[in-house]
Length: 212
Image (cartoon, rainbow, N blue to C red):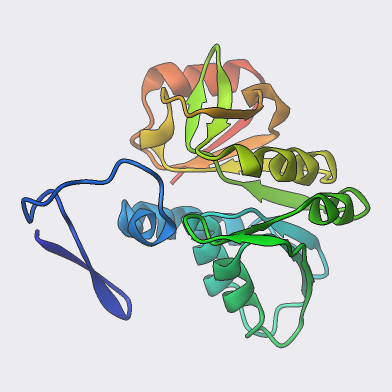
């Protein structure tokens, strides 16, 4: 268990290797966590996208997998804010790309700027897949970095349907930067390890719960 094998490489598991574990969010290490669950979540997300949809793929490891799995000849428009999503989407021959741009944050591979937020506000999407680092019944949906907040809010306000895409370990967690209440989402896609308590919470709010 010192390394975890993923397609195209291997990622060190620092705890198994007896190394110091950095607690802050960084996309490369996050991508290796719960990889199989994230693959199933991404596969399910793809089934919700229709040809010629305008689709928002928020920054995150799971949204990056959605971009990777999207068929090369699938016709759609992708709104993206991160390098990992852009890298995958630019290889798709029939995808039109709206890239927000701005200052680059390597921890999350995101681009953020006031101009990027305005571009999002002037755009519209049929469906948005939004990532998060924490969900709490009282404190809402949170992320690790404050610079992501305005971008995430704009992405949600510009979309017809918002779907929270995150693994079950992030439920009952709180990060520093709040950006939404759970009830602002139309659906949640997560893995089948979600606790009964949170499954009941999601469904009790009238949100579609999709377990994979």
